[in-house]
Image (cartoon, rainbow, N blue to C red; front, side):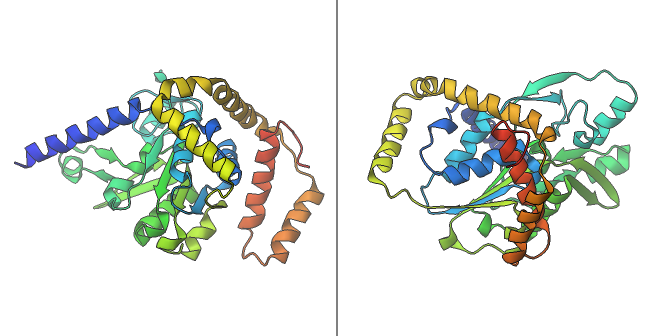
Length: 323
């Protein structure tokens, strides 16, 4: 009986995957308005060390649409074939332990191109679903660390999206924040420990009417975008027309914005390449810290994030110096 239930769930899961792969995504460059939200997302893609972004706003303001559109826009990445952690073929900080060992032995790794992962974390997810599970029986009887990767592993080098983040269980929030801050996820069961990279851009969204954010959660996101329903009648009509055109003929609509999408994608790639060369003068650093001090911001996270965001913006605009 339970075997049949598992088979049914697997079929549903695979069907959802195929559906999501084939379903056209509304293009990022066609989204009308909400410039603050779009810029915050783009800067986090240029420099993931900014620390993610929390987007709070009314229902129907395009939060989820924009985030999924961004994931579709991003350039493909090189990953080690057959690895469940999206391991980087050359960067040890982005490799799983098994791939790192193969690399040290001089084993030739097979490399494939893959789309940047965009992982949804559902509100009802369990700790095992998020962190991954260890097969204790196999570990004890066969001496093999059989690990089933969770959502944190799947999100490595990608985007982890939490809708209605203000309603997420406190325990899961702590796990997410720890992984996001350290870039690693550690799973321990019965004295067996497995550690893997979990470097991702953490994006949360929510409606303030459905619950306030915990102060420690708000503090750990690098950026905060507060968005509202568009009031301008002309812009509202434009949004409706664009969405109607997309729903009527998705492929034609995507072709219309293909050039703009490609230009923005190349701009992101150029910014990521240019970022290490961007410099910020001491005087500007002092101004940033002065503003943070006058706003009575606790700690120095605000100073660090603002410096990183300023450099990411300069790189995105093609400059090597923050002005």
